[in-house]
Image (cartoon, rainbow, N blue to C red):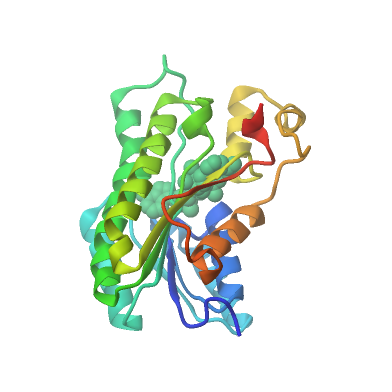
Length: 253
Ligand SMILES: NC(=O)c1ccc[n+]([C@@H]2O[C@H](COP(=O)([O-])OP(=O)(O)OC[C@H]3O[C@@H](n4cnc5c(N)ncnc54)[C@H](O)[C@@H]3O)[C@@H](O)[C@H]2O)c1
């Protein structure tokens, strides 16, 4: 018996990085995985993950949708409802971090970041909540960032992630009565493409990143997968509106 047997889980941007780790952890506990990816270039990564899960005896499907496009998100969730009849878990993982300083930040970049990290989450929650309220059950997990409260990084990214924490709490208050929980996870530094790019642009080495972390290492993506599994499962049945910081102690500094 898995902790998520038969539950349908949509992970946005689930084909790589932290998203793929979340998909793997939920699937290992029996979730039926919908691996969302944004555009055709990412299709092979999504299909590869689906093949891996199916080879392990899991049910999984890859579905394309750009979370910034209301119509594509509506079609994605309608497709899930038609195919599986329900949607139990939504993990809003898709994110963009253009790594611009305040001086470099222009309106176009600002809009692009807010559009994926915040409006994209709004789009997905809007569509998913229609299904979840009808079920009287659901679980939303928003992947924020420690950047939201340590102010380290770029203003567009920080602002989008800080706002995401507010959105998480707002949903928790309003949808608890439907048996729907809403929580956030704030990762610290993890070893993914996003942080590899950050290290390249900021000239900080992996060693310098590690020195900032009391536990003394950069975690791999599975630490976020395991945190998401906890919040997605009934082990966290009385937790809503929470922000689970997974950062090796980084924010204790
Ligand atoms: N890696 C870290 O250390 C770290 C730290 C804090 C927060 N995060 C957050 O974790 C999440 C995953 O990041 P990651 O590190 O795996 O980086 P990543 O760049 O590998 O993953 C981002 C994912 O979002 C998807 N995506 C981007 N735009 C999209 C769109 N319009 N529609 C659908 N999907 C889209 C990408 O295809 C990719 O799958 C992000 O929200 C990020 O902000 C990461």
